[in-house]
Length: 229
Image (cartoon, rainbow, N blue to C red; front, side, top):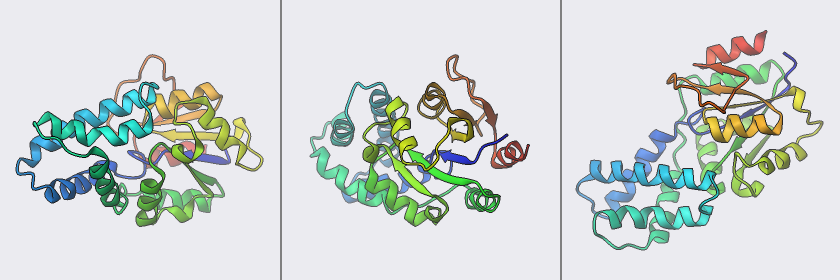
């Protein structure tokens, strides 16, 4: 297995986005004196997931997503708010959250010691992802961090992978591996670019018909064993 360049998705692969989002959203709702926190949290999850699916499908822009999700949330409960203002507050809180999954740093440390070149390849808002990586303690393990907002295209757009390939010295498809939890953005996107993939699947989700990962692992130990062969 001649891989030398490992491209890691961040959220739900190394960074615990659920924990980060929970804290940031709680702080935002507290600022606006929301009483029924569970109801707002549940509604936000539904609205936000749909908007991200729409973004990946090209139905909305990143700015539309950012500007509308909190306006939609509060409108759901009959309140009118400035979505952009709330987004700014939320992003500040979120950028301060560096929660990682247990074993994530040890994984990167081990891979780095084995000579792999590690890269982050993530969708998201640049200031948020940079802030969270800095808080996480993981940023120093990466040769470079590629964030969709800076690259100009989100995963699974082929142009995302083309752009990052241009910025990696000596990039070769045959020696590069994309590792992530999202079957559309990470797996199908990288596969259609011609890159081998690892579907990180700790929750044992069923494979989509068209994702077709090269490998599937349930935890970091399985990933290490895979790369040792």
